[in-house]
Image 1 (tube, one colour):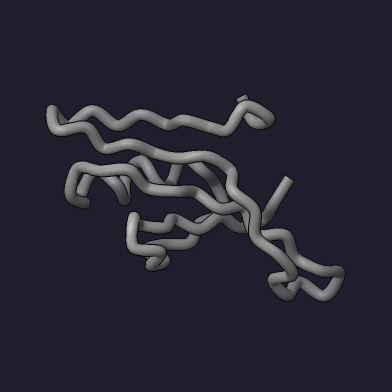
Image 2: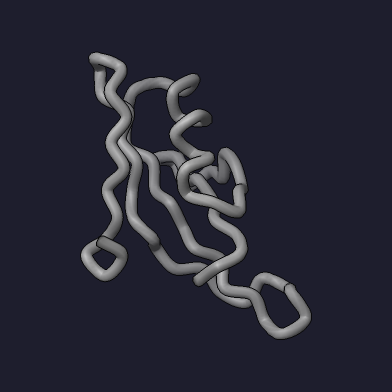
Length: 75
């Protein structure tokens, strides 16, 4: 399990960092409808970001619905 996650927009820009996935629900509700990627940051033993890997996505639908969509390995 990671200690840090990143929210990435469709242009590859980092929008937010958090220590829980659920935090992004509140962030995305204030953003334009769309598809946002969640990356898991894997730290080395000193706590420095070592690598990132895709955790899944969060969708902000046109009707305001927020859908958390983890990749299959996280479901």
